Image (cartoon, rainbow, N blue to C red; front, top):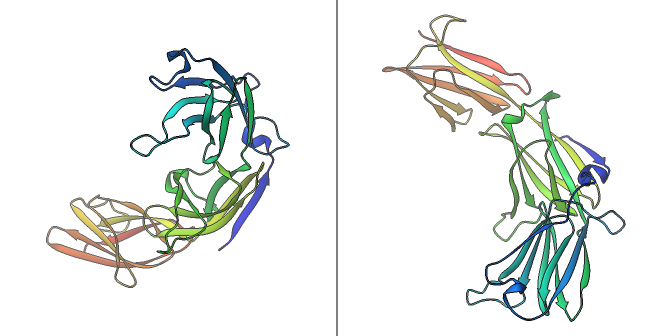
Length: 290
């Protein structure tokens, strides 16, 4: 399988307007410092993709948790802020603070004493932009989706899902590392997989190569004629596996390269035709009434 990979600069990931504002803060009900008489101090927060880069100006989600779990075993969320840099008022104490930027994130345990405190989070994150083509032909975005997984498998051979149903040409922010990517062309059996590396402060653009094509099916009384109504379709692989069923008059589907048989039912009669799918060559398959 071929993969074309390009590395773009940091600016593509954080090119936000200069007017981007500090994060807006929301305090959980009953947990705001204003609800008690204890003095509150400012916790000033900034997030960076890499230590030598500029602060991220927007798109960060900050969450501040208590450091002790509640009766349900969960850490209560005290405050949430969305934007760029954040200023959160907190009473003295110990907190767990998490910064999320897309699918990238970092956490710190922070102690607030009797003064304001500033903390910087280095996410060590980058971006991943995914696309795919078949036989050097562009695939329409509506037929293409990606899923991003952790690279490592568990004891059962499964990988943890990081980001499902990712559209092509969309930047996905991820912590630095190697990820397993599944690309689906259509929804049936045209898939490819790849392990891709994300580097901190950079955008990785990858173009995966599919081997498949689109197929439209029609039952006709003569070649090139109008499709006959009242049809029920099934498509089988060369090994006899049923990979597609539809009651549409002229369904469109995407299949991996290979040999198939189309079976269409019209009334009490069945009609069959074998056909081949060649990578990048969309085709109209006609089954004749005989």
